[in-house]
Amino acid sequence: MEQNRKSTVVITGASSGVGLQAARALAQTGQWFVVMACRDLAKAEKAAESVGMALGTYTVMHLDLASLASVRDFVSKFRANGRSLDALVCNAAVYLPIAKEPQRSVDGYELSVATNHLGHFLLCNLMLEDLKKSSTKEPRLVILGTVTANPKELGGKIPIPAPPDLGNLSGFAAGFREPIAMIDGKKFKSGKAYKDSKLCNVMTMLELHRRYHESTGITFSSLYPGCVATTALFRNHYPLFRNIF
Image 1 (cartoon, rainbow, N blue to C red):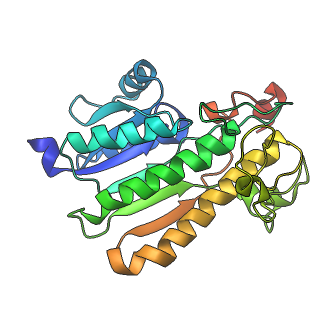
Image 2 (image 1 turned 45 degrees about the vertical axis):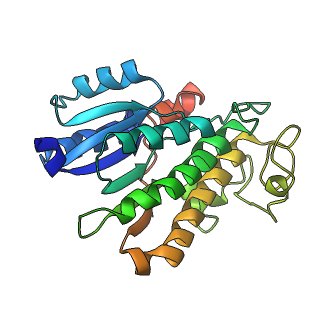
């Protein structure tokens, strides 16, 4: 009964890094019940234990953002639990900066865009209905962006492999499946695919705010936590990069 009186937050990718620390911090306030939405349930349970999250302050649920079916299944199971949703934090991300060829999701889309944008886009749209029913004064939908998605910032200006650029979305328009791997329809560049996916994240928040903030009272926001190179996001990068940062 106690957890039902708390506000409920869903955090994707909460088994490591920024997501795990956010889950820990919110759980320890005593005001939030945290749903850790993760691919690896055993890893998430171990991570929660490692940072001292008390039993009864959280639960772990399976979510693979690279699978649209998994996103729908997660939403269905969350609703079956009977909890209200008061905040959704879209934190999970895949970053494959040294990949030479595109990896594909189970739905056939380039993996970083599928995970970082398409999965979260579907999750946000589905759970928007749950947030509308929140009993809190200020339900929130938050997504993690990156400075590299902003061409006006130094991180976004660095032309390695290229600045973010969605073009006219011709890759999406053509179906975004083999042989297409980039949103702009051009040659695959793994680092740029990540930047493009995060640019889509920020644009999604801006558009959700434009469409729904006034009518629903939901606060839509994006944030950049800085380059936390020790997190699992950088597990696929060169060791030198991680050591420098």
